[in-house]
Each structure stands twice: as C-alpha cells, then as structure tokens.
Image (tube, rainbow, N blue to C red; front, side):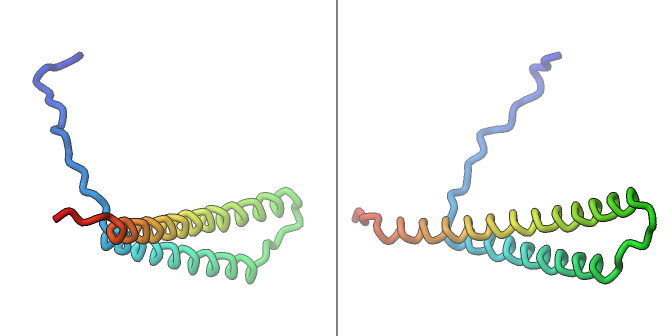
Length: 106
C-alpha cells in the first residue's frame, strides 16, 4: 500500500502577496462579478417576460421554484466575486500601508 518510491513534492515556496498582484486579481474578480451580474439581470428579465403557462398548480410551483433557484445561484456567484474583489482591494491597501509605515533599515 505504501510505496517508498513515491516521493512527496518538495516544499513549495509561497510567493508573498504584492499590491500589484492583489489589484490584478481584484480586476479579474470584479470583471467576472460584473459579467455574472449582467447574466443575472438577463436571466431575471427573460423569466419575467415569459410567464409559466399552466393550469396545474404543482407545475406552477415547481416552475417558480426552479426559476428562483437559477436566479439565486447566479446571484450567489455574483456576491462571492464581489466579496473577493473587495477583499483583494482591502489587502492591497493594507500592503501599501505596511510598506509605507515599515521603518527602512539602511
């Protein structure tokens, strides 16, 4: 079961975050968040323009539940990307403030 020939990966060095990397990530995350927001609005508008045509109350309930779930999942993705964007921007600000307040040892 335990093969001694299989080696574990070497210790990977972590690259420390920089303000530029944080801002770049925030731009990508914000772009994806905006795209998800536009998709959510498009889906909600399409669902509102095309009501469910049925006399069966069970079909109406299932249809409205599915529509709510679809819009809700896209809204959740939008919110997550928005929170990530805000977090990365806050981290960039924190790193800049740390660099400015750190005493320079010459």
